Image (cartoon, rainbow, N blue to C red):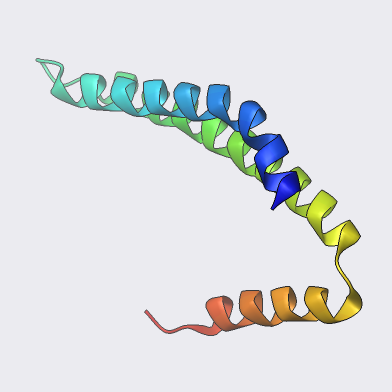
Length: 88
């Protein structure tokens, strides 16, 4: 919990940038006449923000996993496997 709280300031700007990229996608979708290239470019910028956000989250998660016991890490791993095996 402490490590998650400590990482919050790192996530705030990433979340703001991702939100701005989402709005840019919506703006591109509304362009008249429709501009497919503008939409694809906006989606590309959103993907970059998504990847930066995920990379940051993965780094925090690795820090957290480093301080967990083997049993706690096994619980996390089981949870991930359960999520991966869910049928949608």
